[in-house]
Length: 215
Image (tube, rainbow, N blue to C red; front, side, top):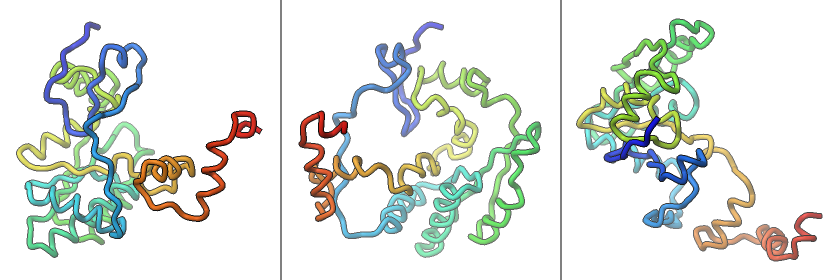
């Protein structure tokens, strides 16, 4: 398959260079990426601020699977919308009738009812999300090959947010889980977080000879 020039890729997607296409991975870094500012605000305040921006550009559609990541986003979006007097978010869920074992509708309904979302759209899906299914091929024609390779999973949902905003729980595990202690050290070394006394041992280990680090 020939390379396709990528223009106007979806937000959050990574347009791969020829070298990255050959490697199958994004290799570089974004030089325009602004480091996160150090703040005393908690994680909830940070998510609410991000959600508010999306709610101010209605319709605000939330890709909702019922997992903890998308449920958190949906709940906070509903809360902020009610608090600010804005249009409520619209939950959109992909369903897979050919895979009955994937049915989580009972749990999803409990979440939707609990957070008070009034509009919930269900999209039945068969093979559209295959790696080279209809949605993936359409995306490649329009934007080129993108990373992550499942970016097209949200294509049908994004269509419902035309002119507005789309919120997802994508990468929620990376945000909500503690992560590697070495990740914290990298943030300390870059001045993005305040060092703690407990960081001293790991900083010393990082500066030690290779033989010591591999022992």
